[in-house]
Each structure stands twice: as structure tokens, then as C-alpha cells.
Length: 136
Ligand SMILES: [Zn+2]
Image (cartoon, rainbow, N blue to C red; front, side, top):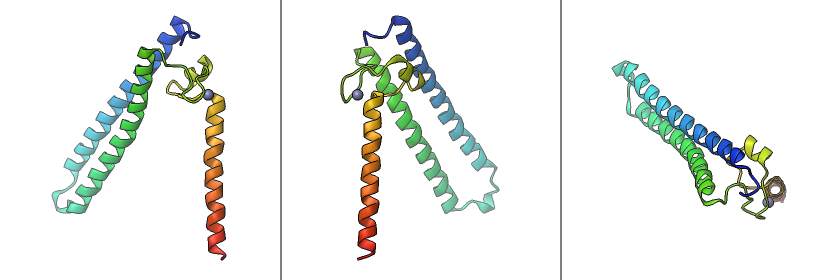
């Protein structure tokens, strides 16, 4: 990430760390709130299914948070190894403005757009072939 000044690197690193800490805080808070709420539920309304749904919520939350935290940690690792700031597809510079807006970005804007177009193309193709099967 030679193209980034030390100041820019520090700023991006601080932003990543801040995001990660905030996510960890929110995750902990949400889970403890859910536990508290469960304690407030009158005992006669507690059944297995509500316990189950609570478990699912927690699980889902952890998955989402885990995913985001994982992304941030991967980015922080790339900061350490010096790979940070370069596109995973074309090795081009992602650019400071884009990184500042999205510190976990792994693709440059061109590759990102291409990826999105490809995804959209796949989705459209799927819809078209579904339609064909439907009207056979
Ligand atoms: Zn690229």
C-alpha cells in the first residue's frame, strides 16, 4: 500500500478498529438485552418454542456480526502484510477515497462493478430460464 501515505494508512486502520469495536459492543449488548428480556417473560408463557426462537435470533445475530467482524479482521491483517488497499482481482490500487468510504473494500471500483454486473446477469438468466420452464 505504498500509494497511501502513513497518515492515510493510520486513518483507515483506526476506522477499521473502531468499526470492529463497535460491532463487538453491539453484539454483546444485544445478546445481554435478549437474555434480560427472557428473564422478564412470565414463566407460564415460556415454552420450548420461544426458547428455540430466541436461540435462532442469537445465532443469526452472531452470524451477521461474525461475518462483518471477520471481514474487518481480514482487512486489518492485510494492513499488517501490506496487501491492504490493492484489489484482489486485478491488483490495482483501490484508492483512498473508496477505502475511506468503505474500509473493508477488497475490490477496486471497476472490478466491483463487473462483479455486480455478473451477479445481476446470473440472476437474470436464472429468471429467464425459470420463465421458460414455467411456460413449457
Ligand atoms: Zn480491480
